[in-house]
Amino acid sequence: MKVAVTGARGFVGRHVLGELAQRGVEVVATERPRVVRNRPAAASARWIEFDIAHPPEDSFAALGKPDVLLHLAWDGLPNYRSLHHFETELPRQYGFLRNAIHNGLPALVTVGTCFEYGQQSGPLAASLETHPANPYGCAKDSLRRQLQYLKATRPYKLTWARLFYMYGDGQPATSLFPMLKAAVDAGHKEFPMSGGEQLRDYLPVKEVSRRLVDLALNPGDPGAINVCSGRPVSVRRLVETWIEQNGWDIMPKYGALPYPDYEPMAFWGVC
Image (cartoon, rainbow, N blue to C red; front, side, top):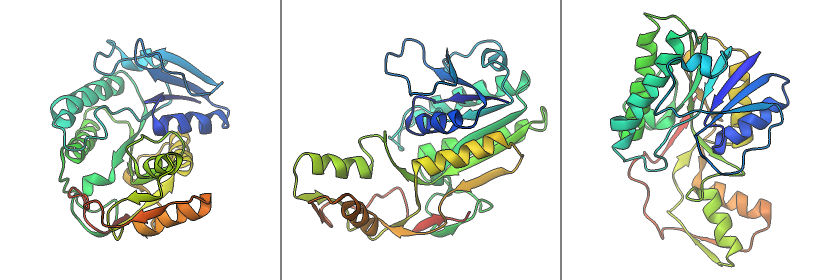
């Protein structure tokens, strides 16, 4: 079996490559032209230069005609409010994927976001109607709809895997866990944060990657699904657990920062 992976240098992509390396499948990993960062360690992957903004005439052939595309690439994060997501990124993404599908791609596993649900609170099932409330969620939800409509003209298998919150090695520095660790490494005794009462759905990135690889190696046609724990946890409790597990000498300073205004206070996924 051959799996192509876009976004292979990213936070999730690096862990996906590590998981695929243990599965004994052929892997084609994409990278932008002239990127000089170190590649993730994945002995089984063949790297190719590929620019989604300027795809070749036949993207499916350029990717090596894989059995499934595990599509993780998305530019413009973590600025969820940027108009780039639907003004620039959305047409680029759809154009690339449409090209690959029309040229023969049989199966696509691509990642969505819990922000597609918008300001809805409580347990969120994948069948729930979406109401995105920021440009990033809007663009992702629009891409999902476009890909579903595309099936009427070119049948293929689609898995839209909505990701919730993650943590682990290689996470962007602006995320909660890296910010906490950076404060510890700097010798700070307090960690400024919100009140921490918001409920979220968190998974280690290694578990997220394992589930994505499972979906890619057994491609069905479920449409939208949630990749989540199904268990709400308060951000306060999560931070306290990380401090305890790592033996860090730091205290959360609750209420020092405001709560994010682009998400509800309590939501989690239904698996």
